[in-house]
Length: 69
Image (tube, rainbow, N blue to C red):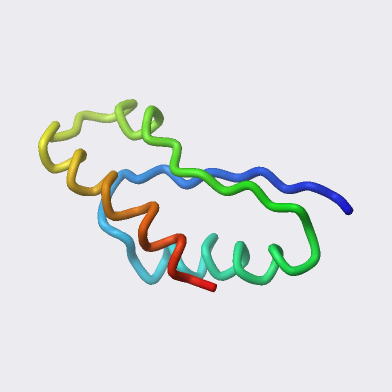
């Protein structure tokens, strides 16, 4: 079985665009591939961020992704 590795940059709150652009595909692909998905939190600091706000955002993303399937 082929393997897929992909990450999501948590630069803000989860949006419909995140769902349509990536997360929906993640759900569909995991049935046919060995999939590894992650939150690439270090990439979120490539742009100016409020430290406390980013911390709250980072805590929410993994929980959301785990609930999808």
